[in-house]
Length: 209
Image (cartoon, rainbow, N blue to C red):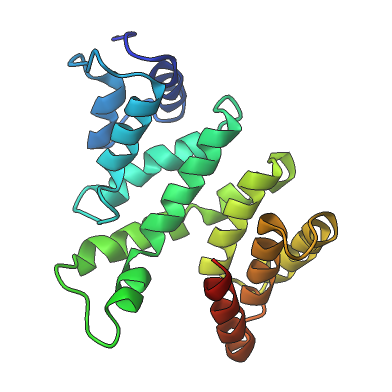
């Protein structure tokens, strides 16, 4: 086994080896391959690794399979909180590519979209959301907010009420007018499924940021 590379690569490799002992997605070559970029440090490796899974915010044929790597990282307490946050954020981005492309192109239609790959990526994330949300009690506030985003993207009658109750604790801790406080309140509105409130909150948030 190749043990070279920056420390974060070795940590990721150990996590994936434990959680995915058999079949691994093609992007795992970044962890287990022998052709190592000698210029890699933690930061440059992370940039290349995440880009290998979701390249320039575009889903490709291998994206859905590669997302299993992000799930493995997000579920492992050995992975630093910052990188668990990044893993969940990557999952959120992959799950919402189609919607964001549609919004960016409106009133036209997205060009050069790979609808099949986008749909498979969304399904790959949706299937793992329950086990990701199960980590909520152990997670730090930043990762919890990232998980809240996933919960809103894939709402159920069970998860949304639980999410609202959990986020109200955040709302008491982070006042309105702070970055975190405003983001928490925005997610709370999204969890209502009230289109008029969501539209008003979206316009207010995008004006502010």
